[in-house]
Image (cartoon, rainbow, N blue to C red; front, side):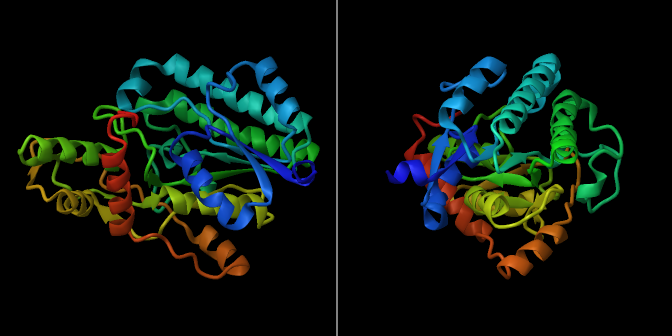
Length: 318
């Protein structure tokens, strides 16, 4: 029976932005693995017994751990206890089950928003614990930072193979397009969609000058699979494009796709000007194993994302 011979991979948070992207790309190079894409309907990962039961049933050889309780500024400020407790429990249970079942490798997803608030740029992997995170998301950030500490502890004490990846701003299909609670690109896409529909100008908060590094979800999916299967690296890796794009450039690409007039509301605050992440560790590792990674051009990525959003407007998260 071929299924019995196949290595199995559990993807927690398998129906979100990154999990859905992995589902779309894994068959290109890894179709001889059996993937299980888990959602909160399959298992409450904050419950250890439930998590263990599911892991024992599937018996994964590999785990990609994406599941988290996430939210925008308002949720991070209003629900600090839930953000800390849910994420700590989810991470604890997943890693513990990976250890108990002796998985060959677990790749867990962190975020650049968990880095210290006061830091120098560019940020690199060694700077994660060099000071407190921003007070607005400290509960979430500390829970995520502990995931890295916990992974290292398992590696050091038991010689497990647990690695953390740190992506910059991810965008793509299957994202959360909620106007209050989303990240910048999905929020702007939804806003522009409504402006076009109502025949109004597309208003963007701030001057549009701040810079960010944006990675298309399917590029990140390919790089997570590469991290899982093709390199031997236990230290954390920032997965990101090198170049930074201004919010203005991104908003203009979106406005052009919708054929919508754009205006910048400069009375609104710009937020942090830049949060540059250093991707040189990834570039070096990838060059040694594959050469140069060709990232999806942001114009192409946004176009694909908008097409998906329009097609799935009635059912997508918003």
